[in-house]
Image 1 (cartoon, rainbow, N blue to C red):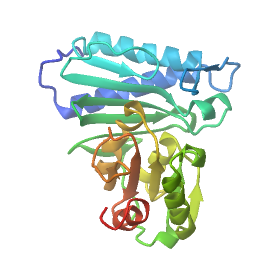
Image 2 (cartoon, rainbow, N blue to C red):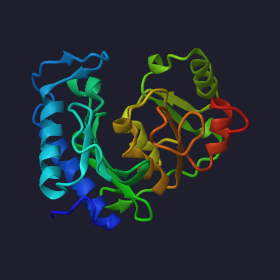
Image 3 (tube, rainbow, N blue to C red):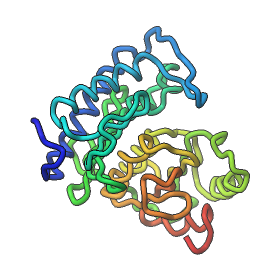
Image 4 (cartoon, rainbow, N blue to C red):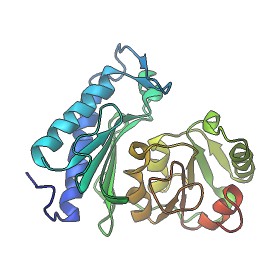
Length: 265
C-alpha cells in the first residue's frame, strides 16, 4: 500500500490502514507492558515512557512508507507535513497512567482526518485483546463483528464513566458530573479510551471527559457515532476537536446533555 496525499482514497482503505497502524503500534507498546519501564514527566505534567515513544515511531514509519504525502500529528513528537490535506492523528498509549501500573485499561488510538472531518478511527486494546474501528458509512467493528451501543433508555439503569474526577477542573462541571452520577445506576472511572470502547460495544451508556486533546478524541468520534451513539463537545457541538467530550448511546443523549450542559443541549 502506497497512497499519495492528494489522491482520493476509499474510506474502506483508510479504515483498514487505521486498523493496521493501531495494531502495529499497540504491539510495540506491549513489549514494555508489565515490565520495568522508566516513567518521565512531560511539561504538562502527564507521564511518558519509552513505550509511548517507540510505539508512535513505529506508526510514523508505517505511515511515511504507505501514505508519504499525508501529514502526521502525534502526542509525543512534532507534526510533519502539517499543511497536507489528509492528516493522521496518533496517540500511542492513551492511558499511560494505567499502562505503567500494569492495568489493562489503555489503548492505541489512530485517526485519519481531513480538516475537522474524521475519515477513519481505530482503537486497539492489546492487553484485553480487543480492537474497535469505524469510518463514516462503513460501520463500527469490534473484533470483526458489528458494534452497537446499548438501548438502555433510563438513567437509573445506565452506567456513566469518566476518566478521573480530578480532571473536572471547572467547578460547575464538577457539580454537573455529580448530579449525573447521582442519577445513574453505576458511575465509575473506567476512563481514558477504554470507557469509549465500553460505550461503543453496549457495556456502558455514557462517557465524559472534561479536557481532551485531538489525539485523545479524533479516533473515538466515528467509533461512537457509527455504533449508533452521539459524540459532542461538552458544549454540544458535534466535533472531536472541541477540547471536551460527552459521548452517549442515542437513547440517553438528550437526558444526559440536559444535566451536563443544560436543557437546550
